[in-house]
Every structure is written in C-alpha cells, then in structure tokens.
Length: 442
Image (tube, rainbow, N blue to C red):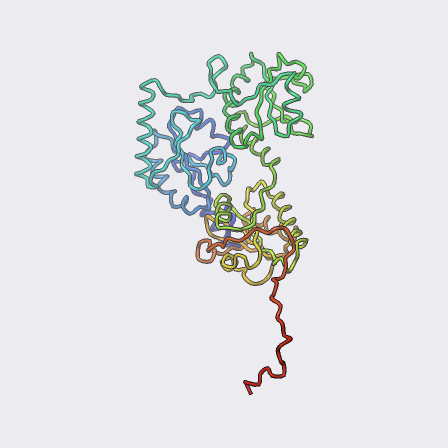
C-alpha cells in the first residue's frame, strides 16, 4: 500500500486503483515469496519478472504494456510480477532499488539479468524472444547451465556449498556461541532424503544471505551422525532440523519453509532485527541529501533550532529523540537526516517549514516528490504517532515545492560544541564629541 494516501472516502478509491495492478484474469503471474522458488527458480521456462510498487507511477504506466506482452508470450515465455513493496525481502534478495525493475531469469536461474530495454509491449516481447533464442542455443551446444529441479543431491554435485559453513563438535562453540553474528544451522544426516532435497536450497540461500547481510547472518551445516555431541546437546531427533543462534539467547527452531526464498526471507528478518539503527546524517552537501533519499523509500528530515537557541545539550536532546525513533523503525529501512534552521533555507521553503516552528520534521518520498509534515510535538510520542500513521498509509501529503529537491548549500558539519556569537570589532569612542553628533542634520 502506498505510504501517501489521502484520508477519507478518496483513499478507498485510490487504494483500489493502485493496489490492483494485476488480477487472476491477466496472463501475468503474481509471484510471492511462497511461490517464487517453485514457479521461477525450479522452472525450465524462461521468465520475465517485474518487481513493482503499487504506488509507483512508472509501474502503473507499464502495467497495460506488461499485460499485453504476457498475453503475446503466453505458452512461450513466462511473465510474472512481484509486489516488491509488500514483499520487500524478495525485492531485496534480487537487489531491487527502484521501481519498476525487470529481470530475466534464463538458463542460470541463480543469475538473473537486468532488462534495460524499452517499456512498450513490442520491446518487451522482442527482448524475451532474443533471450529465448540464446537459451535454446545454449541448450543446443550443451551449455545450459540451468537450474532444473532444485533438488540435486550431494552425489549429483548440485548446489555450490562454498558459502555453507561446515561445523563440528570441536568448531561449533568457537564459531557460533562466541559470535556476534546470527547463525542458521542445519543439522542433517547424509542418508536423509529430505536433507538432500534441502541441500541446494540451503546452498543457494547461503550465498544470497552472505551478500545481502554482508556476512552478518551465516548459514551452516552439521552432520549430526558424526557430531553426536552437538546432536545430543540440542536434542536433535529428526532430519533436517534447523536452529537459529543469536548471541545471549537460547537457540530457537526454524519452522519456516524449506525453499531458498523462504530461508532468505527469514534470514533478512533476523538481520534487520539485529542490525544497528540507521545513521543519522547532517545535511552538509547535496550528495548527502540525494544519496540518502534516493536509496530509501522515505527519508525523515528534521530541522533543528539554531545552536545559539539551544546550545549543545539542547541539540543533543533532539538528536537523541531522532536516534530512538530510527532504532524503533529500523525495519522500515528509512533514511534519517537533520539540518540546522537557516542552513538549508531553500529546502525548508520547499517543505513549507521555513522561518518558524523549530524543531520541525518532514517525511519525504523522493520517488513521488511528496512529503508529510509532523503536526504534533517533536517528542518520542509525537514522532512515533506521525511515523506510525505514515507506515500504514495514512496522513496528508503535499508535493515538494518545485517538484524536485532545491539547491543544497555545502556547510561545515556541526562540531558538537555550543555556538558562539560573532565577535564584533571594538569601537574607540574616546575622541568622539557626542554633543556634536547630528549637528550637520539640523
């Protein structure tokens, strides 16, 4: 659902308009974390997949063309769509940073290609047929490299296990128990059929998770028939058993799906739960503003009073409130910025803040160039209510003045100290006859 819907009766109309990009009657196949692996990754077919957000204007304009292409390619190439606003883990899994993003899943389903062509049905169909021709030629030459069933066994060599960490009775505590990272550990038996089916999914997920979390969530495996001390210690009674280990907590059972996408989704949730809060950056240049707002669905900008009005302690108290809110809403993956009143006057004006009412806060959707203003108090409670409303798609919004970010001035970052009044030159009045001042004007 869009973060920026108008409240009242209009919101129902907008919701229906933007939430229904595709329906069961279309030839576009709706994909989710629950069916993506089975439909796409384990498929022999060539797939074109659009990752979209219902509120995205470009996505809405692409929709009729995508539907026409799907109908034209029916029975030849599969055409799907993922609501990446709703299924953020799936979008993150494939590095989706903007909407719409189109990827081609061809011979090697684990290495999707970005589609860079036109957004018309003709261009999409041409690209699909070109990719299909390449796929057929690869098969003809015996270089398919495809990922057919997703169920290769250890004996068949399926699934690259390079990122699955093998653990033993001797290495377990050193690697897992004493680690600050999150570990997902599979306890398996070599003869277990379910373990063999899981292996390629676990291996593929391990590589994706390593990349997406920068190694902060690790996937590992323990041969429980050899490392019986560990199996007894954690009460392993069936195979495969997957447990999640986090520092300072008792291990918990993983009871989610056994597909690559299911495993990755859980790993990313664990990562966001344990990730540090986002950085709180001062807007000292245009690059800071644009890189933060372009990389996040929302950027939260606070305009704090001048340092002479609050001193360092007062400013730090405002920054502390922002840091607490950034921690509370870190799963939203928003960007967090601040500036001093008057330092970025053009930006203030474009957000309807300028010149009064400090501290102030605005939440900006850079893709839509719309913003919402904090109406309540600049406090934990007031900001929490403001952000909670945004997170469920409520709250009034307005377009950013000028339809784009204004000029951002380069300023020196705050040094963390109290402000000082500018030093004025001393004026020596000893030689001035004050009685003579103004005589010339009489």
